[in-house]
Image (tube, rainbow, N blue to C red; front, side, top):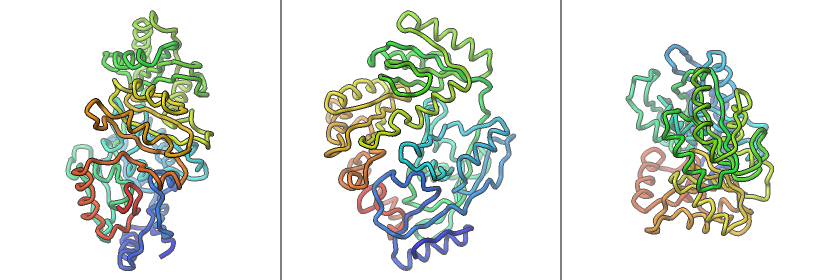
Length: 404
C-alpha cells in the first residue's frame, strides 16, 4: 500500500478495505504534529488524512462547527476568531515540545487524542465538546455517530470512545464540535512566594470560590515563561465581561495578598501565559529530558511532585489546580518510570492517577509502558473494544499498548 491520501469518505473506505485485504497495518496520520506521541509504530504504510480538510458547516448562532477531520487547528481558530468564538477546551500545541514546527495540528488529531488545555477544569475535556463524526472502522465500514446540533445526544458515547483512542479504532473523516463565545476580557492574578503544599490549598480555595476561576497553575521555579514570576508562583485566571473580571481579580487579590506578593496580567499578556502553560513551554528545548504528563488527585499534586523530585533529577510544574503534573526527567534508564509510578500509588498500593510518557526517544517508548498500565479487567475490556472496531489490528497498531 505504501502511502495513500484519500480525498473523500469513499476513498478512505477503499483505502482501509485495501489494507485489511492485504493484511497490511497502517499509520493513521493527520497533520503529523503528534507522531512522537504514544508507542512507536512498526509499519511503513501510511494512511494520510491531510486531504480530508476544510470547514464544511459553521453556524455561529448555533455554536456548532463541522469540518474535515484533518482541518488544521489554525484554520479553525481563524474562523472562530472572526465570530468571536473559541474551542473552550483550549487544545494545546505541542509542536515545540516534539520538535515538529513544520507540521499542522488538526481538529481530528486533538479529538482523537482527547487533548485539553488549562481551561479543562472549568469547560471540560475535548471529549465533552465532541458532538459527532463520520469515520471508517478497521473493518472497512463507514459509520457515524452524534449529530450537528448541541441538543442531539445520540451517539455521545461513541464520540467519547473515539476521544482518546489515538486512531486505533477508526479513521475519522469528519468531526463536529461545540464552540463557545470568546470571553470579552481575561486577566491572571499571580501570587508569588508560595510553597508547593500551600499552593495546592490556595488553588483549591480559588476554584471553590464564587470567582469562576478558569485556570489554576503553580510554577515552582524559573520557567522562562514571559511575565511569569521567577519561582513559587500560583497563577489564577478569570474571564468574562470586563467589569466582572476586574471585580473578581480585586477580590482574589484581597483574599490572598496577606500570604503572597501579588501581580496582575491583563489581556494579551494573560493569554500568552496560559498558552505557554498549556503548550508545556518550560520543557521546550530540553532534548536530554523525557517529559511525563501525570493526571493525579489535585490535593496530591504537590506531594507527588516533591516525591518524584526527591528520587529524580526533575523539573516540574502543576496545572488544573494541582490535578495535572508536568515532569521532565533525565532521559536515561527507564526515564524515571518506576519512581514516577510508585509516587502516584496510594496507601493501598493502587495507582491514584495516570502517568503518560509524553515525549521520549523511540527506544525509550518501545522499552517502557507509555500509558498507565491498566488493571486486568479494564485491559480485557479495551481489547474487546479494539477487536470490535478493528479485529485485524490494522489501524495504528501498538500505539497505545504493545500488540494492540
